[in-house]
Amino acid sequence: MSQPALLEALLKLAGTYPSFAIERGQPVVDLLWQQERVAGVQLRDGRQLPADLVVGCDGRGSLVRQKAGLTLQSSPSPIDLLWFQLASPAASPLAGSFTTLVGPEGVFSAFESASGGLQLGWVMGKSQATPELSREGWIERMAALSPPQLAAWLREWSGGLGPPSRLTVQVGLAERWCQPGLLLLGDAAHPMGPVRAQGINMALRDAWVAARRLLPLLSSGCSGAALDGVAVQIEAERRPEITDMQTLQAAEAARGEQLRQQGWLRGALAIAAPLVGPAIAAHWSQQQQSLRQGLAPLPGPP
Ligand SMILES: Cc1cc2nc3c(=O)[nH]c(=O)nc-3n(C[C@H](O)[C@H](O)[C@H](O)COP(=O)(O)OP(=O)(O)OC[C@H]3O[C@@H](n4cnc5c(N)ncnc54)[C@H](O)[C@@H]3O)c2cc1C
Image (cartoon, rainbow, N blue to C red; front, side, top):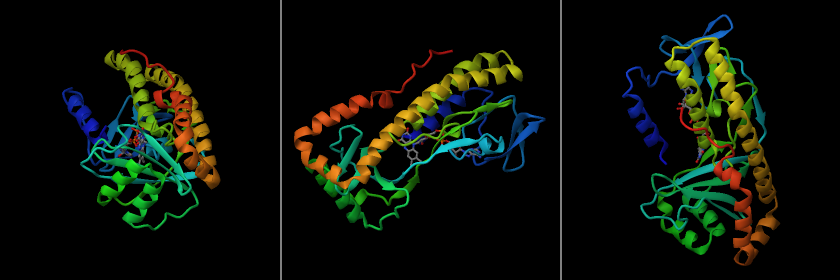
């Protein structure tokens, strides 16, 4: 789904609560401290917002995490992604499937975008320079790996292909997600790998668990140590799924890396695809069940 549309819908809903406020264009530049306890945030315009609990959801480069001195243990990734949007008014032949295409020229993934058209991710070695190809050059490279129907569709809508943006893959896990007065959630606590696109899923699951645990306390006016205790519980509840998911992603990435490095294997698979392709796809999907669905059952509403 479209992230901006979802976020705007959530903001509209949140705006119906009298205690809700949003500051656009005012990033947090520092934390406020009371001895060892985080006691709020400072905005760029100098205003200070005191808080019983700061929840840092500021993404993989989290300033909140850095200012709190919480270390991120990063796992090296051998790959980067080149990210493309291909705008088109016509439905693609993918029919809703997240599809990875493998052949002698390389590996890329394609899936439908909420705003129409496709998102395309071309896998690159980290040390590889971004190829300087024209729009048509990229379309031909992708079409060469695609089955005839998709290749024809790519060529027909080639005019909608935007330039690639290089996405640095960053995978990591903060040593701790909380300290007195502070809780990290989402990418701030655990930047996810791109395999099976689990970053948003995991961030939403964190938010759900945090809301479920924090709301009863905040509604009854608790602060200080009570909130800190719950922040520790939230981390304990969420950390196992994140470590398991990152382990699964790493195993899948290693298999993908083997394919990426072995041109002969990609070539052999492409030749054998008409015969054994459906069986390999079914087996691979089966192995990815947890990666696709998530691992932990979510608790019910508060
Ligand atoms: C190109 C790309 C494509 C991706 N595609 C997918 C996908 O298809 N599916 C998927 O599941 N995941 C995808 N991901 C990963 C996904 O975007 C993240 O895992 C997910 O958004 C994490 O959510 P989050 O809320 O923790 O952080 P983010 O979505 O990164 O949100 C962090 C927010 O904090 C704000 N912020 C940052 N610093 C400050 C500050 N100092 N003060 C105030 N605000 C601040 C940012 O502006 C941002 O709004 C993709 C990532 C990239 C880069």
